[in-house]
Image (cartoon, rainbow, N blue to C red; front, side, top):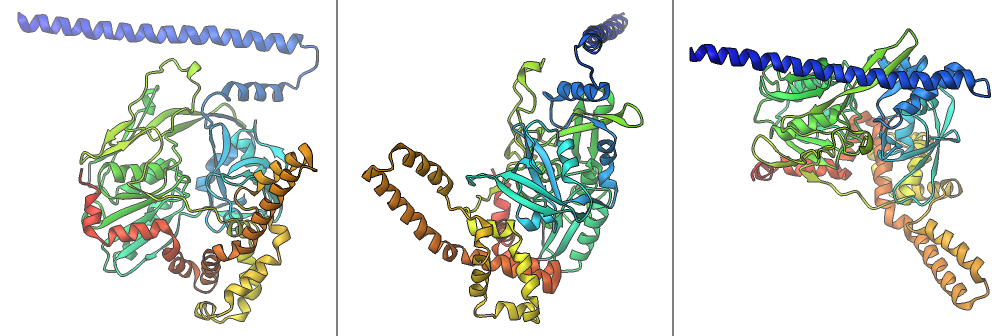
Length: 546
């Protein structure tokens, strides 16, 4: 009798649960219907009664764009050629300058420049804020509209105006569009006798195949560690990230899951196979502010499962999943339908992507989580590295030279003088030649020292205040002398960095990507730090000890 009563109670609980769910859904549908009626009424009265004739197609797009503008930047209405850009990851190339963009703090920001692209060669960096495209202000642009303006026919120019931290004035980059190949693994090889290196630029349908090929090749050496470089990797396909993690993580581990409102948005992804990288192989993942989405999943899972260490700088913080709904043949709606979560339970997505006033649930999310071994890790702001590498001091001549492509052009004009990379390294007057070449382009470079732009603005205001005041003119003369002295000696302060960048360009010319890496690994702080940790097993193990 007792069992019968329990069964009856269970049936009632299930019944009333279904009734509650059904009532909740009916309430949602009623609210949708009421809101839709209001929107339709406003639209009808505007079209039929507004004093001027309105282009219906353009007005409709503008209305929908405005409706979506307060949501996250990845929820967008796509029309015609914007819709056709969705399958970029499955095609071989596109006409552009090689940058990935996203929105941060409601401004269009460079997530990452593509390797060996016009943007990368010119010195555009992750974190640069894109304020104009061919003179068009990006303040009210969607990311898709910005991407449409940046892309174009191969051989044509586009002017990107960017703001950069520590640069007083906006910088103009005149870039010539190229066919940009959709590359995955741009380089792999051995950094020394035991440490392998894989540079992964994006996550497309071919990424897992290329990473597996790289691992197989590295395994032919006396391999003890792998550095997986995901810096400036803007992400891509989730399935690709899961397949790559499958190569490092033990079978049947929960890697990532997605959670959303619709049932089909809730999915769990497990490692399906035995890893091809043995457990005793140490792993270091490199990330920076240009590492986003799938890159953050890979780095975060490696960190959460204590499979390896993460080195570099805070990642971008994109943990939202989009679904595309085709409205008709030429129109589609891309909607954020879920969020990514990694094994510790943390969300990668940065806070503040949605205005609080339109959120129904404003409960604060947890910010501290634990790895499988009990280490504390942070959520809600991308991935925080185990070893944070501080940004280098600003180098105005180096950055200006990169922006104008002087290293590339110098090598092209002077490569006939050398028959090997060694002959370049052994040139006793190389740095003098480089200095003369850069200084011959000084007018085009528009080099500004730290604080110089702010000083120029203040100088003009002081002169307007009273140009005859001896104390003001005396102070100005003193500061003028200071900046003149700094300008004269600035090249000497930067010459070692400038020489190394030029050597990298020459090494790439003579020995390809392997040559460039042979120079890069000695001056790249992230790689140097990763190597020093991996070479010391005690330091490596200490990361996982609380």
